[in-house]
Length: 296
Image (cartoon, rainbow, N blue to C red; front, top):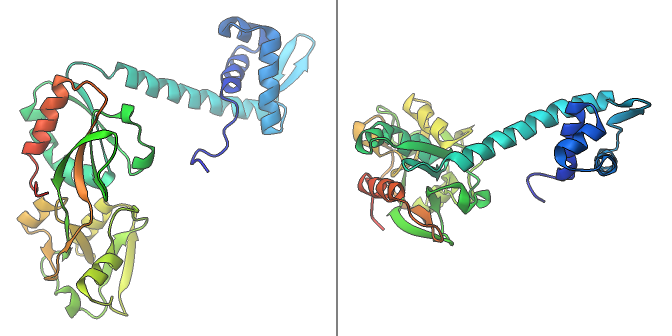
């Protein structure tokens, strides 16, 4: 089933918003270019879908029922948000404007440490960073460039491999090696992305069994996991392409000699069927030049 669930008739929502705002089927019809009877039919469809009356008919027009009043407030807000988002997408086409999509882990650990440098190196750049872990529902028309980890080469886009990830347990300085601790705190992601490799993969790759007395902390995203480990909260799997700065600064330290090669790659992606604007080329070249791990 779609993640949106079962949606009501969308045309009927627009008609309902106008009728509730104007307090009249006839005025709503004039605004939308519909007859009063067409407005009434759309409202009837919506009421049938919801299973409740939204308007009470009266001699001098209509008025919202209590259910209709509550629904109208929510629908007006939601349609306003849709209009604002759509307007933003339509207007984000300036010569120095670009949308880059990436996962939250990549945004937190890779992009954020480089944003000041990006501003300095590409004067006048206006950046929209679209952060999502739901790449399966990310449309090609929603971004100019994207950086994601993928287990297989993506389709419908031109790609450049930024790196093959290496994964090793890390912790804050002063921690004992992982296998020297009988009851380590193991930090993991609460809902691991299907293509990401987590602790069970690393244990198998290393030929080890997880300590019986381990304590697991499951956090909401990878950035939280890294932050918890840096504060001395426990051991986390270090995706070295993402935490290069922490490793070089010594704020995170490898805690086992076994490093697992990831099955996939980090890809820089660009929609294949779209003209590449100058700013897109500039930012793509910058991302490649500032990539610290370009082994394929």
